[in-house]
Each structure stands twice: as structure tokens, then as C-alpha cells.
Length: 352
Ligand SMILES: [Zn+2]
Image (cartoon, rainbow, N blue to C red):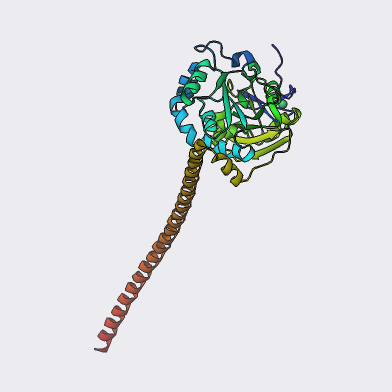
């Protein structure tokens, strides 16, 4: 049996759970199960791990996600808009964008409508065909190492929930960085493991991060520090962490070999609305912003209602105490009145 090695080259591990160990050198959580580079590839769509069944059955039956047909519709109005906002901040259309692990292709489709020169990549020929048919965008069968892409030609490579699946993150990211222009950037969403996380405590508190423990899929669970280290080692030392869509367990960041410069909202809006289909995308973003305002307003009102409810409870308790006190006093008055009457009666009897 070969000795297990972390992406960072270290082979000293600290215990974490039955499925994972923590690298003593870089702090990444490393799967004990693993998956090889060969197993990542799909040569038989009906039998291989990331083949057709992964998309049709595993995702919905085993993991409880909506199926790929529903997702190709619903992702457009939630995560895809979140990712697009961040992409617009750092690169304007018509930048050249490749999404590795694009699933059903809705984000590539949205990017295409936004005016980007967008393409995708997936491992299963079945899902590649599905995405191509559904969104009319170019999608290739991976891995990325097998594609004929001119080095230094891409503005952005997006990897949403992909980095943690890679058996060789160093090799694949090294190759991917070579495909970027010198100022090109990677846009990445991946689970965020935290140094202070403790397996027993996560189980005891039913922590949100528990669902990231899928040891045959999530091979490396990075911390912010360890992922920064990975890219720094590859010459991409500029990293900007953005608010993740799924803040309970993810991190979301842009990383580049050159300093990352942000566009203003106005510049991004002007670029997006410069094409007819981009205007429709801007309208989706506008709607999404309005919904967020309404949601925030509703949450605030709910907070107020809860605060008022708590105040009413406190007042009710005080009233109950006052009522009890009043009843006691009335009892005392009645007793005293009775005594007075008895005394009066006794005095009248004495006087007569
Ligand atoms: Zn390590």
C-alpha cells in the first residue's frame, strides 16, 4: 500500500473522523477514501462514478438535491445570479470564461446571455450533451488537461464546487492557471473547513458542515489558509474572498497571479446592458435585488414581532404578579373588615 500524501506533499496526519484526517502541515482535511485521476474520468457513462447515474440518481436520491432538470431551471435565479454579480465585479463581458464542472450548463448559459464568450466542461458525455441541448452553449468532455485550449487565452476559469473533487488539485490548477492570460483569474466556490472544527462537536450540534463529508467525492476540504497556500505555491498569490452564497459551509474567492482590480457597479451595469440579451440579465439581477430588499425587510419585521412578543410575555407575567398581589390584599381587607364588624358587634353588645 502506498503512503497517503496531502496535496502539499506532507504525509503526517492528525485524526479527525472515520472518513477524514487533517494534514499536520497545511491543515487541509484529506479524505481517507479518495478517488484517482482515472476514476474521475468518465469512459463509460453508465458505469463510471461521475457518469450519467451521478446526475440522474445519485444527486437527487442519495444527496437529496432536486434533479438536474429542475436544477437547470432553479439555479439560474439563485446561485448563478450570485456568481454573475461577483464575476461582473472583476471581469466584464465579452471576457472569455470557461467553467470547469459546469453540470447542466445554466451558469454558462447565463454568461453567454450576459455577453461573455463562455464555455463549459463536464466529465460525463451524457451531461455534456444535456447542457449543450438545454442552453445552446459549447461544453466539452473533460478533464481539462485533455482539451485543446491555447495557453494564456482565457480571462476567467470558474470552478464551482469542483476544487474539492479533484484528485490532484496541484496538477489540475497548475494546468488551469497556464490557460489564463497573465492577469486572468480563477473564480472558486468550495467548502470552507475551519481549523477549530471538531468532528464530535459538529455531530453533537448537527453542524451545517457535516454534509460536506462525502469522502469519495470531497477529497480535499480546504481552509482559507490552506487554499491560499495552494495558489501561492502555484504563483497565484493575489486572493480576494467574497461573501459565499452558502455562507454556512462554503468559501468563495477570486485568485490571480496579478493584483485583482474591482469594477464599479456602474461600469458593470453599463457593460451588461450594452447587448439586448444582457438587458434581460440585468432585469433578472434587478428583480433579485428587489427580492433581497423585501426578504431583509420581512426578516426585520419578524424580528420586531418576536421582540414585541417577548415584551408582551414579560408584561403578562408582571400583570399576573400584580393580580396575585391584589387578590392577597383583597383577602387581607376582607379579613380586616370581618374583624372590624366583629369588634363593632362586640362593642354594641357591651354598650347595650
Ligand atoms: Zn497538507
